[in-house]
Image (cartoon, rainbow, N blue to C red; front, side, top):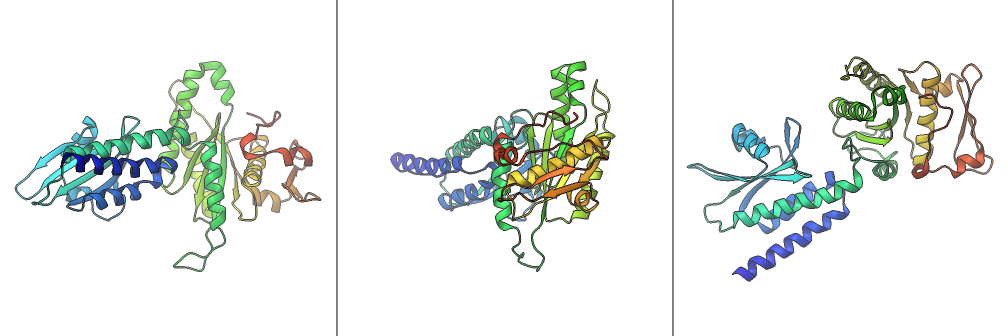
Length: 355
């Protein structure tokens, strides 16, 4: 009997370990399937914890219908499995700890004839959390917890492969927009208050991003004080409205010791005909214009092109498009050779872009 349990545990651990090659937010449904496969006598539900929101991964079952809110709070605060015995049903709550934070919660309800070792079950759930902790190191920014540049490139490539294909229930094409945001005069914040307060500003700013954008949007710390958000399934007009609302929210937020902080944003529509480096370069050109035009504003690349404020130059032998601003705003020229050498992984801040 003991050898059979060890064999099943080893099988489960090997299946969980496979998740190490996937992304954190894409393993939950697979993990739930593995648990249900090996524990058929349990009713199993998996919930994601996003701040105060606790949402089901797969079904529409609300956690309040399964357990009391006090038990949920105890499980999350104590970060350990708890067992709830009631006349009707035995329920076990197990938190999934990712870097010592309860990122998910498993609710298991064994049937009356179930002989499952619930301690073994809880140990395997904790093992899944350990795997996610390892995965998160490679895909998340260590300071803010947002996705890093590596993940941005991967997600952009996946998104571009889907663009232009009709959605299931409508003939409208899937659309997306990318916004590159930069904190204005951030160097002065570091120089005046020190890097400790500078890091706090970055943390609070990333928190505002998490509060303001949808869970389906991709939030990235691109590097330094630069951040990226990819808005999916949205029009250009709605994208501009959302970004303007976020710009105002940041401007109205009081950052401890530092005070008011503003951001400049450049946005562009993501095209399936371009490379990630091209899309990022277009957003960067719009951001550069926003900086030179006075900061604390949102500039849309397509609008700048239409109004003649940015000229589009087609390279004679293909490659990345080049952009040049008109004289009414100080220019930054990029040579064709330098532009072809630029890639997403080695992109550098232009020396003459205002901070």
